[in-house]
Structures are given as C-alpha cells and as structure tokens.
Amino acid sequence: MIKSILETFNIRGESMVEPLTSGLINRTWKVTDGDKQFILQQINDHVFKRPTELAANIRMLHQYLKAQSPDYLFVSPISNSNNDDLIYVKDVGYFRLFPFIKGSHTIEVVSSAEQAFEASYQFGKFTRLLAGFDVSKLHITIPDFHNLTLRYQQFEAALQNGSPQRIKQSGELIRTIKKHTNIVEQYEQIRKKADVKQRVMHHDTKISNVLFDAYGKGMCVIDLDTIMPGYFISDVGDMMRTYLSPANEEVKNFEFIEVRDDVFSAIVTGYVSAMGKELTAAERNLFFYSGLFLIYMQAIRFLTDHLNNDIYYGARYEDHNFVRAGNQLALLKKMEEKQDTLQTIISKL
Ligand code: GN1
Ligand code: MG
Image 1 (cartoon, rainbow, N blue to C red):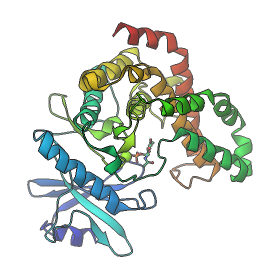
Image 2: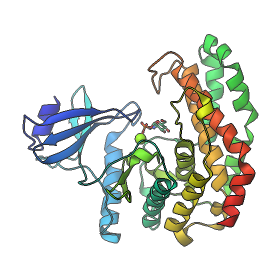
Image 3: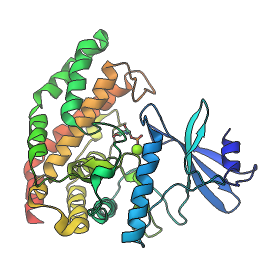
C-alpha cells in the first residue's frame, strides 16, 4: 500500500521505507529513494477528524508566507502526479509526503540553553511572520485543543464515568489537580483580556518539531497540523513543559525532573527577540504563567486518559498515562518552587 502511494509521486519500487517512532498521534516514515529523501505521514483521523481542512490550513499559510516572506523555509506537502497533496486510501486513511530538508536534523532532548533559544526564536518568528494573517480564516483542526476550562471539565467527567478502580488508585493525583484550579481561573481571566491576542499558534512546540542545521542553528518549525488560532501561552508553555527539565514526560523516576534556569531564560529571550514589538505588555507578564498552564493541562490530559482507559494516548505499559500524569505534576511542583527565581530572571531581561 505504501509502495502504491509512493508510485503516484514517481518514487521507485526499490525505495527504502523506515518508520519514525517519536510522535504519539500520526504515523510517520522516512523514505529514501536514491539520493532523495522524503517524510511520509499517515494522519490520525480519530484525532484530526477532517484531514482536508488541515491540508487547507497548510496551503493557506504557505501562500501567505510565499507572498509576504519569500525567504522563509516553510515545509509543506508535495503534490503527486494527480496534483494531490493529500492522498486518500480507501479504508486506510489520509497520507501526505514532505520533502526531507537537506542538511537538517532534529533533536529529542534539549541539552543546552542555546538549543532552547534557537527553538523559541523559531516559534516566535513563525507567529510574528503570520501576525498580519487573518486567524479567523484557519479551520479549527481540533476544537478546544488548549481550552483549559474544557480540559478540566473532561477531567471531572472522567471522575464520574471513568474506571472506578483507576479513580481509586489515582486519589493523590486527583487531589493535586483539584488543588490547582486557580490555574483554570486565571486562564478564564486571560481569555477576557483584549490585549492577549488570538494569534496563529503552533500548539505543539516540542523540540523535535524544530529543524536544526549542521551548526545547531534553528531553520524552521515543522508538524503544522495543530496550527490554529490561540494564545502565545500555548506555544511558550509547551516549550517550558518540554524543554525545562532534562528528564521528559516519559521518565518514571521523578527525582530526575528539574527546572533549568538557563533554559527558562533562553525560552523567554528567544521568544521576545523573535516577536519584538508584536508582544503586548499583558503578554509579556504571562511567561511564568504559560509554564504552569501547559504543564497543568498536560497532567490533566494524561490523567483523564488514564481514568478513561487510555482511549486517546494509548499505553505502552500498565499505568503508562498514570505515570505520565504523575511526572507532569512533579514538574508543576518544581516550577512552582522556582517561581521567585524565574520571575526575577524575567524582570532582569
Ligand atoms: C501529542 O503526537 P505528538 O507527540 O506530536 C499531543 C500533544 C501532547 C503530546 C504529549 C494532537 O503530540 O498535544 O502535548 O502528545 N497532540 C495531540 O506528548 O493531541
Ligand atoms: Mg504533534
């Protein structure tokens, strides 16, 4: 089946196809055909219910950037010999093929503040270049994706309808989440502020979604499916969530979870230097909050999924999402403990 998709792109039968395993949602392969390389992806249409809208978003942004910022590297799907950039295979699903960007590589873990700066700069630059784009034109690929109020309601629903045995097991984590509803309240306040703008946000700013060149400089951002209107706290917050600690969300021994001051500072400086005057004063005050917001939301999403028997994320071992939720709550605690230090860093910048 993959061979026949590739044939529509005139990619020969003897090409090499290797699965890439890092994402949780879509299925991805690296395709090598002689000296050419590509990335093939099957869209998860349980999560992205309307793949055609997702493709339309990418096309719109591509056109806008081609006209306004022609030098910007925007990695969009290639069209096949039928002129399709989204290929539907009956009973299987939707596929697309990306060029592999020569000389680029991705990393899985942030090992230096420079990497965090580069990535943050790239996400900020992306949003700044699109500041003149009318966000209301974008299709909402996942409704309420980063709506913390709704995520909290889904958690409450899982407490009603989820697995009774798992609810009992999760008592301590549930209590911790309930103790932090001030983060939800603050989110509701932020939504009402006129000077916290709806912008074109990426919504999945993990380090593996940035392409780096051979010198370690950021080239561009990839994985554009969750691009939707949103607040900057989503992108900055997900960077905090995934860059601050050298131990990521999969680590089972929470003692390794840490908040690195230099990485925090690099995320803030990278973003501020890329966004420049685009960032409003109200937004500048929300850097620390962004971290709390996203870490807390991810803890809720993992625990909710655990209570719902792993229907969204799946589980590679018993209690996988329970462990992930505990991990994220441990990170939240570290972040809170560092509040004074981190706020001082911001005020000095
Ligand atoms: C999912 O598939 P991946 O790894 O890019 C999720 C993100 C979560 C992340 C947690 C569409 O992203 O929101 O932060 O897992 N994406 C979707 O690892 O739900
Ligand atoms: Mg993703």
